[in-house]
Structure formats: C-alpha cells, structure tokens
Length: 190
Length: 190
Image 1 (tube, rainbow over the protein chains, first blue to last red):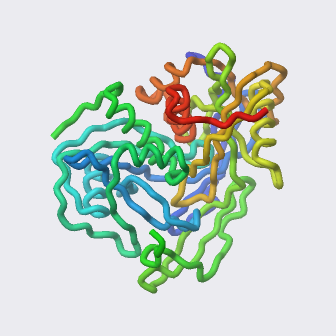
Image 2: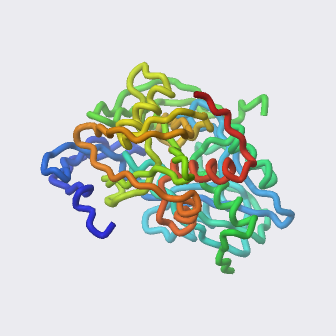
C-alpha cells in the first residue's frame, strides 16, 4: 500500500460552484491515474463531533430531531459542527450541554468517521462521556429536538430493526457494543 | 412519539441553488415548530447500495479507492449509486460485478443507512452477498480502485484502529459482527 500512484487523483484547478448560507461547494478539475482529466464536485465542511453520553445507571442520552432532507424525525446521538478555530473536545462539551443540558466529568475519544467520502470533506469525531450531571439545555435559535434515554440493548436493537438509520449513530453503536463487551478499550480523561 | 408537531418542519418554498454535473442542491424555506421560518440547504441524491461480499472461505471482498474530498485512499465495501429507475437488488448485483468482478448466488438485505441526514437525501441500502464466483470487473470510465480480501476480524479491528473510517463501511461492520455472532439473522434468497 506504499505506492498508490495507480489510485491517486491530483488537483488541476478548483472553482467555487456554490456559496450558500450553509452549503459551500467546489468543482475541481483532477488528473486521474491514467493521465486523463475529470471533475469532482464536493461540499466543504468544518467537521463535527458526536457524543455517546452514558448515564451512571448505564442508560444512554439520545435525541429525536426532525431532519428536513429525510422528511422525518430521526434518532441520533448528540452531535454538532465545530465553530471556527474550536478545539474538538471543547465542541463536544458545548454541543452536549447546549443540546441535552448534560455536563460530563470524564471523556474518552473513540475515533473518527467520514460520513460521505464521495462528496463532502466532513469528518465526525466520536467521543464517549460519563459522570453526567443534568443542568439546563440551551438550544440554538431554530433548533428543536427532544432528549430521551435508552439502554444500550435498545439502541443496538434499533440498528437491526431500522428504527435507527443515521450513519454516525450506527457507527456509535458499533463502538458502544465493543466497548461494553470489553473488546475495545477507551482511554478516559477527566 | 405519535405527535411530533413540536419537532416537524413544513416546506414553504423551494429553490434550486446548484445544478452541477454531480451535485444537485436546493434551498427550501421551512416553517419551524414555533411558526418562525428558516432555510434548509441540502443535496438531492438518487440513493445507493452497499454490498458486503462474503467468500466461501469466510474472507470479505473490499476496495481501496482514492476519495478526492478526503485526499486519500479509503477502505470500503463495494457500493454505488442507483441508476434512474433501477431496482435496488439489480443495482447491488451490477455494482458488485462492475467493481469487483464477483457474481453472487445468494443475497440478503440487511437494512438501510442515511449517511448525512442534515444536508443530503442520500440513503444507502445494505446487502450481504455469498456464493461468490469471480468473473471480470468492468469499471466505469474514470473509476480506479483496487479490490482485495480480508477476514472479518481484520475489518472489525480496522474500525477500532481508524484504518477504516468510511461511515457506510463502519455500519457494514456493525452488521457483520452481529450476523457472524448469530445475534442478527439474515433472510437469504437465491
């Protein structure tokens, strides 16, 4: 895997094709491995954080939120975009507090996922939180969501039945299952 | 959960903001649960299929592909977009054959995932394939990828180490782990 010349695409030029209020997209001309050229269109994204919040009794904190492109309410772990220049753990703490009202005593980074590798630069850093204390949620203007709790067994079963189909939360369930079984270890910090 | 009026957003109007060669995006004005209005920008996507191909010896068929928005080669299960009007299983068979050269005797649908619920309508249907026979791959023009095989244990460990961060493939690993352990059942058809 050291030499990927037969796979790598090189940027030839780049053009902004959309500067929306939320979406920011580019069309790049790229040189393919065989020397020919094509275009790649993609969204630029600042990155995001997802938190898997574990209550002292073992239950998890989740959200139900209407997702307009889906046209329905989705079950998700709390998550949110990085503010400009914001540290990832700071973002995780801020989003957990703003959306759910919880403050965590301990944090552990699981890893990162890339939701849409073909047309967005987005990454989502995945964190676990425990030692939770409930304070007051302060949703962003125009943000409406419902916070609820469920057992890990319920969440993992929803991945099977299709009640939970959000890819970042499915990835969270993979981490959850392997952390709870003891196969994957987390490095907790206060 | 029967009454989600406190969560649901209603479309007021819709405007096309990007008609690219690949990306197609809209900005809708929506009415929020409190009666105020905001805008939602999102990509329209035809949907896609991912295949988890299991060889008779238990190994899995995967791909290494350069993903331009990521700027690097990614490990993925075979996947591809639905052609207009195409049946989902037909698409799964076509993409598996085109990208890897394999034909499967048996198929089982696992479920569906939504990679990016905040700004794309994309869904990815998840299928398992077995009884594989190798024929000849026929990649699309401008498509370059490397097909390889790995054990389920290797794939699941790559999810832990960060060698595999593609969200659809992470979801595939969740299915794989629970199917192989016998906890989740598949309904195989020929």
